[in-house]
Length: 510
Picture (cartoon, rainbow, N blue to C red):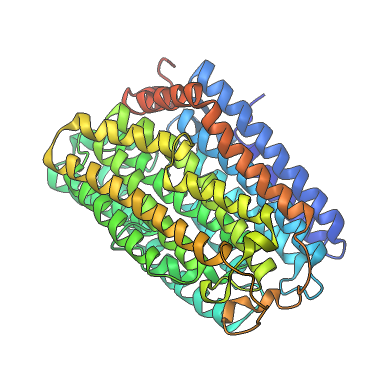
């Protein structure tokens, strides 16, 4: 059975069904959970098949090879699908607990579930797309769904943030279409494998123009410096489940697109020096922004930007070791960043604020919450033996092996960024969890009004359980680091050996 359509079609069908069930929220939740559980099973199966059988391909509609829409699952896309499925499933459980507990719901639940599933379908389609136009469609599906999720509730801060998000992403979509038109005019195809075959025949100047256009488009979506200013103003205003899935997944789709196009279409033009400078500046600017924040969600948003720089470092190195470390670190970061935003939602629930000036003594108030923050926080900072340390160590080893002055400067910058990340986590710990509990004060922050009616409530068990499940998954990445890292090494090697092109165009499958 070919499972390549399941991660895309199943959430779409689920979205339609949950929209019909708008007046039955409990049934909606059950359907959504079953749908995403099915996506996780399908993605995990694809990951196993990609490892044992090589690249999986499907020409939708039985069109001849080279025509129509191709869905492709290699080790890289299968890894991303599996991790994305696990994270979205955990976030959905978290949101279900929140819905049961909230007395005054800000978001129309009947719309949340169909929109959330549609966003998951867009993410899956972007990961599986075998051509640039289908990838564009995947981006548009997830972006239109994210517009709705970001502005649910209609508060002033959310509408303002949504406006920024819409404008930036409409601009990137326009640039994407322009790049598609130029690529089709140059090579006569938008199929990734065919583009990879034909690109070396183009003049150097034309290749450089097309490469830069694609890099610009995906850099906006991945929020790399200097195209990252939109993110800290957009993500923090949304409800915790929405912010968690945005932070965990949406920027990583952009990183995936950069990784895919750079290694498949332009392996002979790695742009190493340019990408290394981008990585260095993204790390520094992001973490300096983080340590200046007093609002936890904004602080985490800046760390998100900063740690995109680590992924750009591995892509810039363009070596099997660097790409393997990037793939592992991306899987780790999807999980950890989503977990920390879920914890931020629990902090807001218990302390009635995300502002460090209004928080103190949460360790006394809720020791469990302190543990839920500390473990992923240390993992984000790269403290051994967590998965964050393993991924960063792999990147540092690859950069050191490169041996150029710029790569060695990035080694120093990476270590400094990790130390400053630890400082940012320690800042939250000292100000929010340490000290004497303070009396609850409400108001003052535009984006905190959704939890004003939760005074005196404990953390719902479903929300805690979902957060703990993501923490457990992040720890699993540590416990099985050996085989997991070997899988990413195989994925990185396959990116550079032409297996993708051979499988899609019907040549000998590896």
